[in-house]
Image (cartoon, rainbow, N blue to C red; front, side):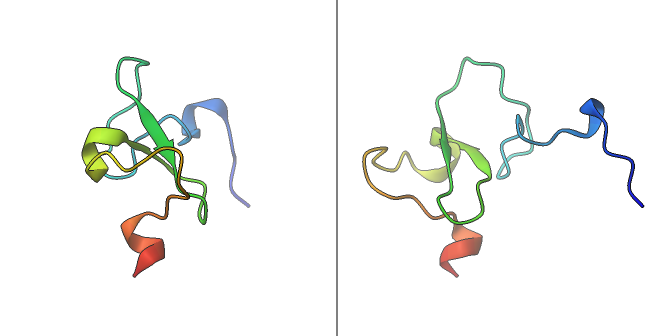
Length: 58
């Protein structure tokens, strides 16, 4: 069984570049897998529209 602890929390990572979000960059969440991405890492999609990351779109 996996030991889940706060140090293993991946919710603050951009799943494109792997960098931790520091609150300085805008982020967007994939509506399918719920992973977060820096807006600039995913070509700044319209935040009003539904967003699917490249993995979920493929």
